[in-house]
Figure (cartoon, rainbow, N blue to C red):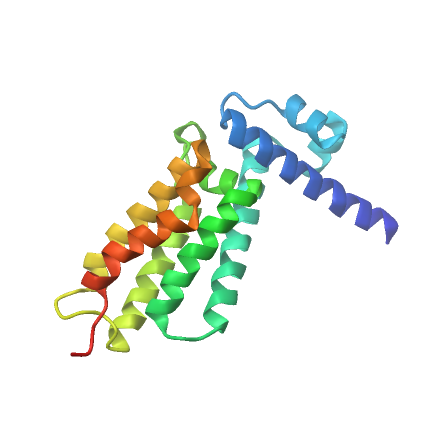
Length: 194
């Protein structure tokens, strides 16, 4: 059992170190030697867990996707309607992006053209936003004339934009910035009782 625990810790250490290196350098310039040094393990240990840099990047993105999934589930469990869940989740996601290098790197890797892969994390986020808006529409929470297909691109583009800008300047991820966005968006998006 101790061997399995040690292997799991080594794997997690490699994912975290890779996230730090990928977030700082990007996918193409990042080297496996730098990642293994950062994790405090040998190149052999790295290759025992990950076949190549692409597999390691995929593990980072998968771990980030798990963080997003848990975050959306946790906020959804609070209740309060789909539109409230969407708003609260964007606040939680941006706060987490400010502090979680694996999450930041997962989003950045998804948009890195050097990987040559579709950004599955951003795609998953988009699908979740669209689903919340469809639910909000069924709940009667969307303003007249607002459709999920019309609103989702603006919300996804803004939140991904905050993530991209926040990778360079954490001020973009501050609660006040997200509040300013929702302050502009919600009056147009939400149904109001007159």
